[in-house]
Amino acid sequence: MEHQTTRATPMRRVATASCVGTTIEFYDFFIYGTAAALVFPQVFFPALGSAAGTVASFATFAVAFVARPLGAILFGHYGDRLGRKNTLIATLMLMGISTFVIGLLPGAATLGIAAPIILVALRFLQGLAVGGEWAGATLLAAEYAPPTKRGHYAIFPQLGSAIAFALASGTFLAVNYALGETNPAFLDWGWRIPFLLSVVLVGVGLWVRLTIDETPAFRKAHERQSNAAAKGRPPILEVFRAQPREVLLAGGVLTIAFALFYTGTTFLTNYGTSPTGVGLDRRTVLILNITAAVVYGLTTAASGIRSDRFGRRKVIVTCCALTIPWALVLFPLMSTGSVTTFALGLIGTLAIFGIAYGPIGAYLPEMFQTRYRYTGAGMGYNLGGILGGAIAPLLATELVGRYGTYAVGIMIAVLGLLSLICVIALGETKNRAIDAEPATTTNPVEGLSPA
Image (cartoon, rainbow, N blue to C red; front, side, top):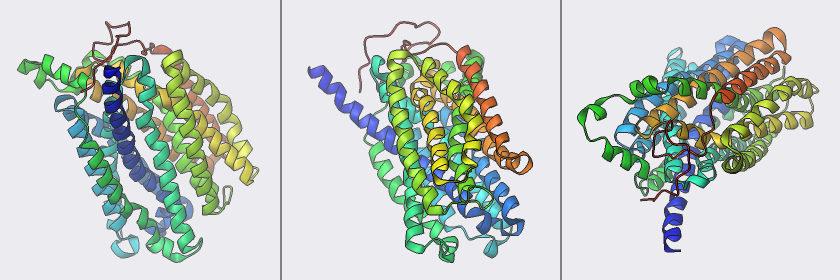
């Protein structure tokens, strides 16, 4: 019993640290997406008009996804060489500073063309930070967790995105209620409040992460790497030499998760409030966003826990199989223009996303060897982000203008098929020992001792 008590205490701290950290990182990331949908076209791209300004705003949103693989390489290198904990502190600091400065950035009316240029640079830094954050947070949970409950504990960093989306929408909603739906103060300075408040959350996150020790799996791997040659080889070269297939297929698997999430959040936030879309008021859409965040948080938790029993791959296959028909009926359903059908479309899209997102927290770390796991998991995750998180929402805006909303549904269905093929091609991972080489360990180990 004493051993179980000793294990439970650090796992609670690890779960808290991984969840709080990703919540803060993704809160900062999501408030940009919400602002890109609601206010950035008028603040930073007023000369382009409504449609072109929206496309330009989403283009700046997409910049972060180009930066994310670079962040995975940069922070993955240090995470695999120096440790998970210190690297996660660095990503949190970078995200916090970038977000706070966006909140202070004058618009195009004051700085002219310099305003959107600086905005793009700051968004790029946000992308670097979140590109290094996700893998480190999931490794923190997965490398501490008991082998038979890895899917269970790996949901905590995944839940951070649901909490963050609810917080981001809730903060904008509070500002909207305080200033009014049509008050010009919202465009002048009200939208800045969520960005400036992030500095408080970052302070809390740093305090929590400083209380966590380095993971047992990293310490063991670090002790084994005693010769200088092994330590000096860049993890990015190691992972693409040893497991390029896993990196590329993992990116393919994550494509549909990103496409569902950013279509269901950023794109639908804009589509729901746009006069050419559903035409709902901001408050209604933000309230529905919070509701959808709760629902997809629940499906994320349930699917991650169930993956310990049924396997990661089977659960993710379920998401892909549901996505294909859902994508084809989504926009015809929402085209009725009612609040009810919009809510059903938004909540359904994010609920299906949660089915895949839950097991991902354990699935990707289990694919890669410890000495380059941070880099490998981060690269796979963020490659999926480029296709599903950057290109899909940007392309969706263009497709609506040219072919109508049904074309967006077809695009999502195609991406669902791509991810289905990729996840079928990948093997099951739930019985792999996380502190050994995936290629040679097919049986579960009895347990891992926390620090």
